[in-house]
Image (tube, rainbow, N blue to C red; front, side):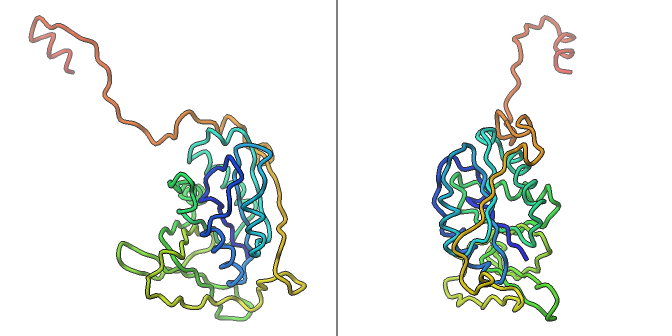
Length: 246
């Protein structure tokens, strides 16, 4: 069972960013749930040290995939989501998680694009994940406690859901219901010791079958409404005025 974590809220990194506390909490949560945490990091420049990945490895990260390409420096959210989706389809995770607050730009819009492209459920504003099993050999069922406005709800999560999980948004008086992990899913390495190093794979757009022209964008494609420039026209009759207004 795999939990894919979009580091930095799915944003493209241009330097060696430290591990965000929310991403660290996700790595630790996956261990408590008995899931294999796999990090996905997008980089716009080569030669960037895996600082966030190394820090996550100390908390139990099992594997990391870093996509490195200069074209990502000018990629907008739809293009970046396309790249992340290609990686996630190869990883085939059971859940995809991110922390919106970990995005340095504060947008956290890439995960929504990923959910749209993968046809997956998108669950924002969650503060707790739970995995429960009803049968010994059955895969765990996932639920999330989330905010819907000022109301706290519990949601059943389908496989492959994209979930924004921020434990810091839990109620102040919340003691935190224990996350129940499947007993057959080890939270540590086979030798009984916590994972201290992660297998790091590096990919390019070519490895994903993507051309750089599909990723480069001159704007973010969100759209801008502007008045259309119209030439100055002098009318001499009502007929020409009516023709101009058509």
